[in-house]
Length: 297
Ligand code: PRT
Ligand code: ZN
Image (tube, helix red, strand yellow):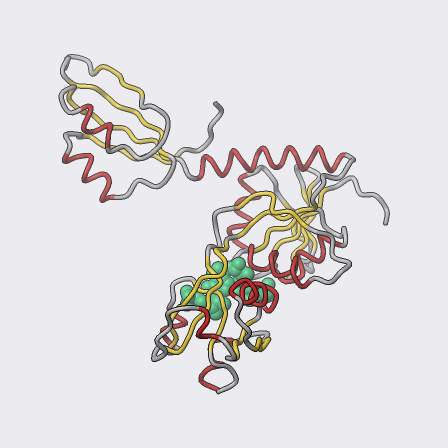
């Protein structure tokens, strides 16, 4: 294959991961000119292009060297590692990306009193993830029939083609609508950046390293909030104890009010109303939660 000097990233063409993946890449400073067939997007600022494909094709495209990186669900990546064929290069999960969260679970009819995997012995389980399900069953020492379906797995028990299913669950609404109940979790999933085990030994390797650094910055900032509040010196300890995780807060004097302090804290995640109300009860007032746009330590 002809060596490439541009980095190529595969992502889902249209689906749950498309918008958040594009948003993430844009925040990393990548912009794309969309071509007419919208399969290939030429990168304008940096030499990084996009290939828009079905999510199931992404690990294969990386393994074949057609793309250098991919944004794909851990569920799809792990399934490929198990069933992608002998010629499949092992791939690496380079970064978890924090969106597209779901879990791969066993679900059983609501009336079944499920307590342990052994109850699945000799039953038929419908799934689109035969690799992951097979591996889990082996680890549990359970011998069950795996019925591989491409879609609509959740209706298999009603149709009588399976006794249980193994499928992705997010809110749980689909299971309830089909009189099923989540019984066991096989895999916690989210979108990940997938790539080869070793970085390419040319310009693409340097580019990939640069991209990973930007990505780390973007992910850290996306999850950070700046909390500003006022407190009396007397309440300071109680207020500080309730602050969500992060580095030590900064304290500033308030002009004309020697008893008061202004507190500034970088929080590692979302600050909920409930947390704010608790902190207020401890003696804080004039509270602000601000998103962080960029951060350079
Ligand atoms: O066309 P293409 O093959 O690219 O798209 P697709 O239909 O295979 O994928 P898509 O867009 O549905 O999902 C892409 C990825 O999003 C998945 O591989 C997961 O990593 C992630 N993801 C996150 C989900 C869900 N949440 C999810 N809820 N993928 C699927 N679902 C389905 C699930 O299969 C079930 O049918 O939603 C239903 C369950 O949702 P709840 O909320 O009712 O529990
Ligand atoms: Zn798919």
